[in-house]
Amino acid sequence: MSSEAMLRTLEEHHQTIMAGLSEVRRQCGKENPSSRELAEVRERLISASLARSRFVSEEVVPSLLKNADDDLRTELSELLFATATKRMFSKAHIAQWTSASIEADWSGYCAAARGIWPMMEEQIARETRVLSADSGIIARSIPG
Image 1 (spheres, rainbow, N blue to C red):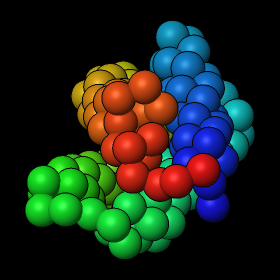
Image 2: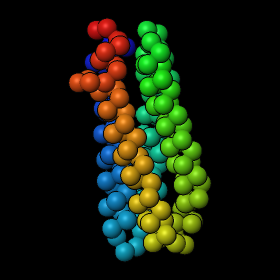
Image 3: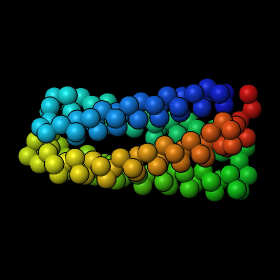
């Protein structure tokens, strides 16, 4: 995959996740949940986040490692560690906040979700910073 295609795909993942976060925020702005709508939004967000994580760890990083020097290997290792750590926190959040527990404690869910959003946004910012077209390692590392 070319660097341009890789960056475009990563940006699409990021946009999908940000749209999902926006929708969950909108849902949490309501006094009472729309369980069906929220479940659909959460499912799309979970799927988008997992797809992004897989894309970074299974496609981006292996492509970059092919020509990586020690500094780049360190940077990629840190990115993978951050990705895995955030995935662990996300899985715990998803496991704790099932449809039933959300319905039983709507305000608790929204408070917990507000704690997860910055983590997700920081991961997107990190990936953008590390992998971006302007200064990131994709542009520096993959020809064409």
